[in-house]
Image (cartoon, rainbow, N blue to C red; front, side):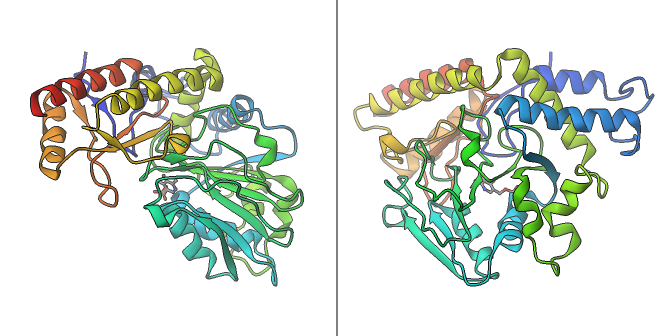
Length: 361
Ligand SMILES: *Cc1c(COP(=O)(O)O)cnc(C)c1O
C-alpha cells in the first residue's frame, strides 16, 4: 500500500482512494482499447460513451430536470468569470453580484468589462466572515450572481437569496459542488472548477438552463459562447479527456455510496466535529466564520499567535496531515474537508488539535 497523507488542501484536493486505484488499474488499457483514456481519440465510440455517461451522472446525482445542459469547459472557474457576463449581460441592465470574498471580487472585476455591475450586498466590512442576510436582487437585473462557498474565508450560503423569477441566478459552486442537496431548479447557470470537490484540475463543469443559450451576442468569440459547447455536447474541440474521465469515476463512486444525500450527511458530521472542537477549546482556537455562515467544506480558524500557527502546521505535517495553512488573507489554519476527506481524517485532526492545545496553552 502506498503511504497516503490526510490531505486538507483547498484545491487541487484529495480524491477518493478507490477512484485513484481504479484509474491506476485502467491506465494502460482502458475499455479494452489497449490505450489509456488520455491516448484514445475523443471521437471514438469508447470515449463518446464515457463522456456522455459522465454528463448524465451529473444530472442524476444533482437532480437536474429536463431543460438543462451539462457542459465540460476549460479555463477554470476563472474563465467563467468572463464567460458569464459575455453570454448573459444585457445592454442597459445591471449585472448584480454579492461580494462574499476573493472569488466574488474576481468575478465582479471581469463583469465590469462587459457593462454596469451592481454589488447588492457585501461582507467585506468584517473580512468576509459572514454571508449577508436577506439578500434580494432587483427585477431589472440582467442576472444575479453569488459565490456558493467562499473557499478562502470558509463561509457558505445556507439560504436562498430572493431572485425575481425572470432573473437568472448564476452560482459559482467551485468549492461546494455536490456537498449537500440543493434545489437546482432555482439555478439558471452553475459553474465549478472541479479540482476541489469532484475531480482533478483541467475541466470546468457548467450546467445551464437551455433558454439562456441563445442569449450570447453574435459577436462573441465562438469558444466563449455556451451555445457552441451545448450544440456539440462539449465536443466542439478536444475536451480534457482525462479530467472528465476522473470526474466520471468520482461520480460513479458517489452514486455507489448513496449519492449527494450520503455525502451531505457525512459532511455535516465532519464539519460539526471540527467546529465543535474549535468552539470547545475555550478560545484557544477561534473560528473565522459566523456560526450561521460556516462552510461545510473549508473550516477556517486562528490560534492565539502567529508563531503557534506556524508551529501547528509544521507539527500537523509530522503526523501525516498536509494543507492546513490558512490563506494569507485570513491567516491561521484552513482545513478543507471536501467529500473525499474521510471521517477518520477529521477525527485525526480533532485529536491532534486537542493534543496541541494541551501542550501549548
Ligand atoms: C478555486 C476557485 C475558483 C477558481 O477556480 P480556477 O478553476 O482555478 O479558475 C473560483 N471560485 C471559487 C469559489 C473557487 O474556490
